[in-house]
Image (tube, rainbow over all chains, first blue to last red):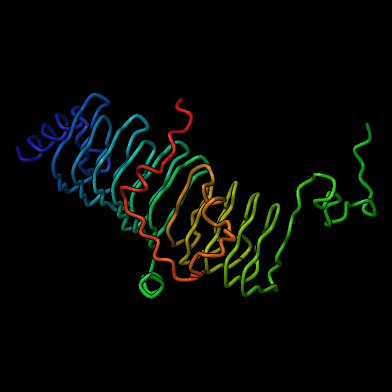
Length: 135
Length: 154
């Protein structure tokens, strides 16, 4: 019975795009969706449409190319393809895609910026000794 | 057409068009090279050595091959920080920026059509207070937002 219940629950969620194949949760937005406020989420977020406020997740954040984000973003891996205004923290890696635009300070462990991306802000990486004394 | 290229005809690494005939000047700092101070290049700059100071180039700057730069970097065109290179703790003003995964990169980045050119131009004003170093740079997030040029929208 337990198993059945779990399966049923899982199947329903998959259809809603809430559970990824590896069993981790995903909060998935569409191009017409709007999120305003603060989201703290145990899983990954696919941001599209409009996001304003603060998004902190235990998993990954990816921002779609058409998205408009004015928010503080924090996740393990953060991947940007759209426009973001706000501070970004990537506990592991931040990727700025070809057409992404980011205005805000970033704090990362690893960083990849593809040619064509626009970045305006302060970058902090790895250990923070250099910046702390350099300012 | 012959595709053979004799070993003896390998092109010399020194660019023939070294600035004089309108071609692009290119300067290379090799892995064993070290620069402390300021460097301004009319053209491209490739760094795989160690630089402690300020770099400015009217073309591209590429830091790669284990190159380590600490200081301000201004590239009127493009800056590339390779996967094994590091750029630490400076003011970075560029038109285009590529940071490869694995690179070490910290600093304040300002992008857009080079107002860097205007900002870094030494103004020979006699009455001005000479304060070459330690300018406070009060750049706020709002400033970045505003200074971001509305470039070609696709």
